[in-house]
Amino acid sequence: MSQRLVATASSRAVAGPLALLWRCGLGPRGGRTFGAGVRALGTAQQCLQGIRFQQSALQIRLASVSHWLCSKPPKGTSEPKDTGPGADRGKRGGKRDDFAWWKRMQKGKVPWDDKDLRSLAMLGAGVAAGFLYFYFRDPGKEITWKHFVQYYLARGLGALLTGPPGTGKTLLAKATAGEAGVPFITVNGSEFLEMFVGVGPARVRDMFALARKNAPCILFVDEIDAIGQKRGRGHFGGQSEQENTLNQLLVEMDGFNSTTNVVVLAGTNRPDVLDPALMRPGRFDRQIYIGPPDIKGRSSIFRVHLHPLKLDESLSKDALARKLAALTPGFTGADISNVCNEAALIAARHLNPSVGEKHFEQAIERVIGGLEKKTQVLQPGEKMTVAYHEAGHAVVGWFLEHADPLLKVSIVPRGKGLGYAQCLPREQYLYTREQLFDRMCAMLGGRVAEQLFFGRVTTGAQDDLRKVTQSAYAQIVQFGMSEKLGQVSFDLPRPGEALVEKPFSEATAQLIDEEVRRLIGSAHARTLDLLTRCREQVDKVGRRLLEKEVLERADMVELLGPRPFAEKITYEELVEGTGGLEEDTALPEGLQGWRGGPTAGEPSLAPPPGEQPLGPPGSKLKHM
Image 1 (cartoon, one colour):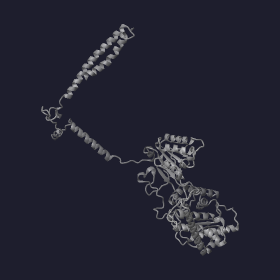
Image 2: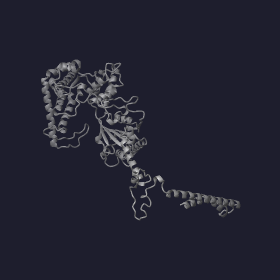
Image 3: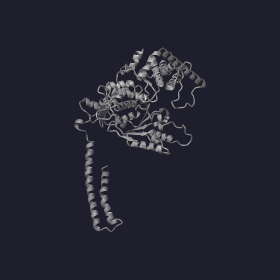
Image 4: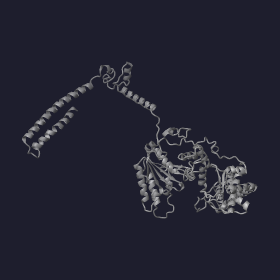
């Protein structure tokens, strides 16, 4: 091996001078001087002498190393006589003692030169290190929305927000982007539809290219039903720009061009018209229904919208929020915001320095019934008819157990109506047959009162009759509350949609019509019987309405006496038995204390100090 090393070194050292000598005298350009050749030859001779010296020195070093390797171990670490080379005492086929290191350890020596001992020591050290790692390691770590979006979303994630208008779908998407601290890209579904072919798919590609460029980010497509409707409906031949746009959207969300670290959110009020390919897992993994808030949720929303208003000093924000939440069943977040804005406008219109409780009550009436029209002129006969019509509604609702509690009766025209009876509907999700029947009777009270006191009927009951008919058909067709028809349920057409084909036979349709007429006739007979027995009370209420035009609940108690049935009106009564007065906004155990969030039992709606509720400085809001 030493000879090979020396030969390699010599070849590299002599190569330069020999090449020079070849170029000077023997190469193709033989015009070189004799002196240059002599100098090159001398240089080559010196290199050869140096190589011989290096060769001798390298041989001496290699001999010393081989002598050290072949020599016996030190005296203190020598192997026992029965181990090592020659342990078989010159006998062929002798076996090596595998436990020689153990015998040496029993004599008080540590045989580090033994290969088996070193292997066992390394194995024990590895096992001990693994045990210590798994024993003392951190079992988990707290992650934030930003870390989740950036590091834990290997592929895109989709969520579809559905629900009635005004429930806060877009607001929730903005809040999600603000909490995550990532760019938020928003686009409307109608922006993809143009009369030029190919514009929609191109805009979808540009949108996702922008999202990938700003990843991790959140992409929100509002009103996605504009481009996500089911394919193959209403297109007889030719190409459909809407279908091409939808196809491009499907490919971008989960196709060959898989989106990375882009969370796609979409909002719509019509999830039933979306294409099934768009709704499958992998594109929109979650379908989140956002419905109207309950009474506790409305109280929390009212506290948020009451914060910027200048309220009367005698009002408490928490108490006012609870009272308004009890007066606004079925209101969405947009309706609550509208109520607060209307209250502030009413207070400013009357030059009040602050917003009072009466302003909020007037704002609720404005949102429910429409704008008040005190200047609308009614003939005396029409005004009397309206007064007894509303008195019939009020008396029937007062003496029926399952009717909604009455709050106010008015004959001041509002919107399209000439009068109204404001009730407080119960917040419940299941209704019995008796409850629905009492509601039908309360709605027929105005028409029956006109028949009793004037002997004629007017067009003022048109809206009441429409509601009664819808309720009767729903009970018979959808809820299976007819004994003759049986336990069946059929879908009714949506308002504004035409029923192309009935899902039942003509005989069943005739039976449904008969059952609806029988149900409405029974409700009319019961209402007529009740108002006949309470004719004096209806007359009292009608005359008082002609005098004051507006009757509060206290006036009704004075005229009719206390209601004979127990009722719940205040916030405390309505939330009794629901686990507390406030909404439970506690975070799960793994997220408690995150960004200063509330712990268990401590609800909090205010954002952290110094931050905006929806858009912290770290987030970016973009629009296509």
